[in-house]
Amino acid sequence: MIRVVIADDHPVVRAGLRQIVAGQPDMQVAGESADGDAVLAVLAGTPADVLLLDLAMPGAPFPGLLKQVLSRYPGVRVLVMSMHPEDQFAGRALREGAAGYLTKERTPQDLVEAIRKVTRGGTYVSPALAEQLAASLDKRRPAVAHEALSDRELEVLRLIGAGRTVGEIAAQLTLSPKTVSTYRTRILQKLHVRTTAELIRYALQHRLTT
Image (tube, helix red, strand yellow):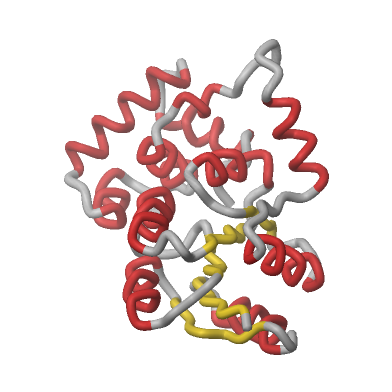
């Protein structure tokens, strides 16, 4: 029996995922979490094989949370789910150790297939994403500027793109406003732009935020 933990902040999404998983003869829902801070606590008290992890939940930022899950629970396969297009975050998630990436536009059967595949030790990506990842191996292909950002810098850029102020970002990421401002300065330099407005435009153009 494949034990699945569902981590998503939207009750309707969790209910849908719960119904899909519970409807499979070889799967069961072992636990649920509505925010990033509670994921580790749920895993600590719940034996699990697969974690369905939403990329954009409140609480602990995704990159750090993924690393903690993989470090503390190496036997858990993490299948990242997101509203964001595959070409923006999938490659980074897979490089950080995720076992697969699935957009929420995919079908229930795709989800079931993904869970079974990562449980067997495989990596789940869509055919389109597989082609993109293969193309990215071609060093002649120019990389997008935000690929040079660290995980934390990318998280700050996403929040800036969503219109958050320095204070709001600091509160959400548990950082000081000064530290957030330092990240903002580094992002400006790496993306070769000068203003916050340009950062917001960049994030929207590259679909880094909803």
